[in-house]
Amino acid sequence: MQLDPQVQTSSEDPYGVYRELRDRTPLARYPGRDLWVLSRYADVQAAIRDPATWSSARGTVPSGFVPAKPMLITQDPPRHTRLRKAVQRAFTPRRVAALEPRIRGFARELISDFPGDGPVDLFEAYTNPLPIFVISELLGVDRERRAMFTRAGDAIIHGQNDPDSARVQAAQEELFGYLASVVPERRARSGDDLMSVLLHASGEGEALDEEELLGFCGLLLLAGTETTTMSLTSSIALMDLRPDLREALRARAELWPRAVEEFLRFDSPVQGQTRSLLRDVEVHGEKLREGERVHLLYASANRDERVFPDPDRFDPEREPNNHLAFGFGIHFCLGASLARLELRVALQELLARAPNYAVDHAGARRVRSDTNRGFDRLPTQLEP
Image (cartoon, rainbow, N blue to C red; front, side, top):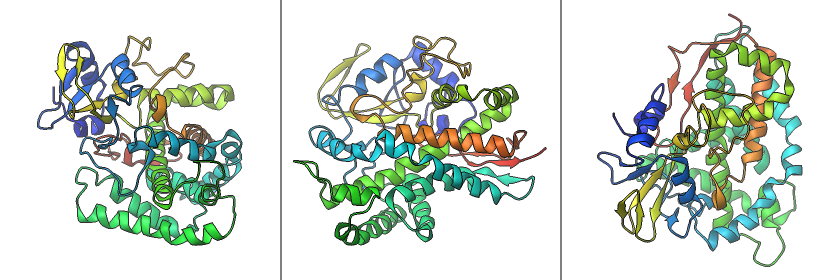
């Protein structure tokens, strides 16, 4: 068994390795890395729900990368509590629901640019630009800036294994420099974009300082685009292998909410996150010391047969489906409702345009990452 997060995220099927971990060594070590790994649902959930012991402040990826600006994902209480209270207004049900017509319209715009019946790389033409559009809309960013968002975000996300690299540092400077440049204008006027809403927040302790605002906007760009793109690519590849699933989803619209949850559980876009111990603990008979780092395998937890009956079967009607794809507890993903909406709309529109699409699996390429799972090349024939 070759145990390495990049090997698992980029392999065709990492879930056999995860099953072996759960059954034989639920607390294991990553060879060559100063890192423990937990793989069972109960253990992963218990760690996520105890931030007083399992801290996010030293980074949530195996390399220990911490962004240049303060982000929710790398904060512990009490600062996390204050920041989350301030920004949760960004994802009210009303605000998210109001985005559906614009998301659907942009999905159709992208699809209208497809080259006839294909072939087309759905990553480049569809799954990558769509989430960038959504976050740009939320932040009130002009279209001409979206290419910069894509370039900088890609450099930061895929450079986390070498966080001190010049490319990562330059990308952070470019991204946060642009965001900082628009703050004075947004502060001077009151608009309905998220940056303006957060700048003009009222109420004791609710306003963000500029560093926190930039960190939140950066988090939206980084976490709010890559994970949605990854989940879309995995879902499209899976549906290609399951024509019966495609037919069921086209025939029965009521399946979509549960199917989206199952896409997230079955091949989780974030395979795991890392925590650092704030005190000594004992796990499965092993004494872990304060300061040690532990990788929590969400994707393994989501295939744990102790929680999910027949976990390796994709069931679009699975209930209950208490997966951990969005995390749990205080770090449950703020944008979960938005991600669900994007997944549903994007997949619906693709099936409406190309119900018989065929992915070239031999030509597809999986992302090599410590944490994220999906494709960055997805060649597809629209009408075989």
